[in-house]
Image (cartoon, rainbow, N blue to C red; front, top):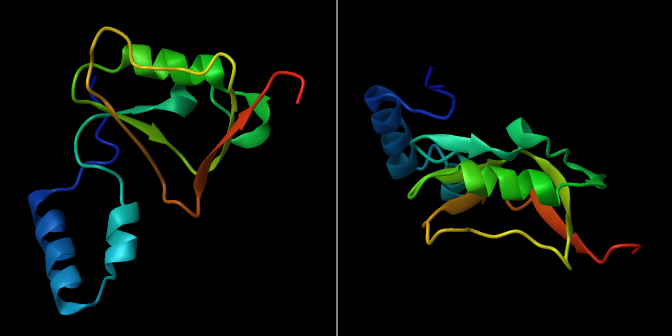
Length: 114
């Protein structure tokens, strides 16, 4: 079953555009809104945004599960990534990674043992 989390209806999208055009909604808030379309959520693969748990494997699994053109979403939190291992897009897929906003989602790259 396809999850509809993150989708905006046509009416919702038009209302958001009207709010931006009239200044009722700042563009900073609009950029922080989730992307329209299907999203792969790193939390569904075990990522915990507490800044303590290593989320490298969860991020890699989310990237592996994404198909070409999909969005990998990071909910609010600080995600610890092992800098030596890292994660990446395999198989030549073109995916986009996005978070809940620069003030809400961050990646903490650490070296094992650091």
